[in-house]
Image 1 (cartoon, helix red, strand yellow):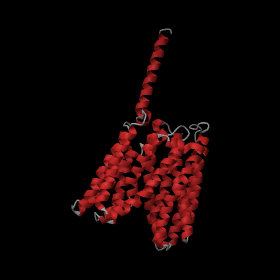
Image 2: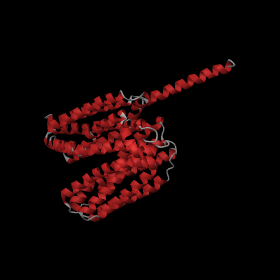
Image 3: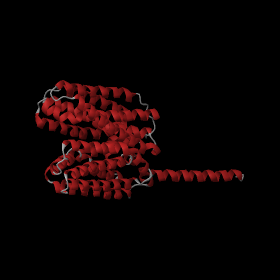
Image 4: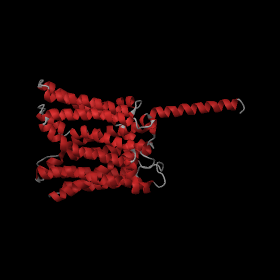
Amino acid sequence: MGAAMRRIHVGNALSAFGLGFTVPYLYVYVAQVRGLGATTAGMVLAVFAVAALVVLPFAGRAIVRRGPLPVLLVALVTAAVGALSLGLAANASAVLLSAAALGAGQAVMQPALATMIVDVSVAETRSRAFATQFFLQNLGLGVGGLIGGHLVDATRVSSFTLLFSIEAAMFLVLVAVMASVRMPRAGRVPGAAAVSAKGGWKQLLGNRAMVQLSVLGFVLFFACYGQFESGLAAYGVEAAGISTSALGTALAANTAVIVVAQFVVLRFVERRRRSRVIAAVGLIWAVAWIAAAYAGLGGGSQAMATAAFVSTYALFGLGEAMLSPTVAPLVADLAPEGLAGQYNSAFALVKQLALALGPAIGGPMGAALHGPYVVTFFLFSLGISVLAVRLGRRLSVEQDQPWLARSQVVRRGGAVEAVQGEGVRAGV
């Protein structure tokens, strides 16, 4: 099981590396290098979101029916084909079709890998496993973006073809790595596939706690991740006068906080109620938006504005580090036995929807409506805390405080053993 988890984490890191390797340069590649214009480049970015929204409802069923590993292998091959064809595409139709294949493959990787983590972990190790996943994802994104930026040259199409070819080759290498993973047979129940195919979504929507968690997840991704490279960046440039180099520093600060704080935060989070941890993240992000408000509207010096803006991204990173060992394990614990793939795919669908709407709404607001923008997302952050507290009322002790539930079981087991021992000594 240890070897399986290590290979899964390699898969997480390499899939994130591929995303960071090419996605930041898609706009430049399509609009300028291929000369297809800004409209086509914008459509390519939209196709990524649309492809994810189309395939994720079916991915959950496939994971439940076939298991996460076969679905992951198909997703990797699809992404490899999409990446290679994108590097060779010379017209708008080819670019859009290639982007759809790459986006669909990358979208399905997320719930497949998450379900594999659930299948090869137990409740005691799940939070740490998902924290490690998040750590490696951010590390992969950062390293991929750094290396990709040094390989590309906007004056040479061949440099981008090389970039996408390397990404495709990496996905194929990952196929070989993941094909060697030996998944346990446990975790499935008879009839689970039939339930998923016929009424999985109805069953999921009937789970009130999962519905509330999905609403909470939408707000989390909409108010934070959906603003990083769109609304918040536009707000920083237009309202706070942040330079592109300072924006890069802010993004680096976000990643640095995650990398440095992830496992320190994990020690704190593992012994706290999950709903209260999420509520605390909402308060931390509310403070982050106050810092953003000062940066753009406070009237201080440029140095102070820049420092406040960088601290906004750093505070977001702290919240992200608290969420990674909390939300994903909670999705797994809410899923009935054998249906973790369905629930992971549903939550990934909510995430993709939030990431599609976040930039579309936040981008124009951040660029033009500076005051309303920060007030709106400050209120969204407070809403996260309210929704988390309400969610906590629907969770069982095992779901909200798994460490407490385990300790109670241990104490009860110890008491039983003690009684049995006394009985033996008394000749019972």
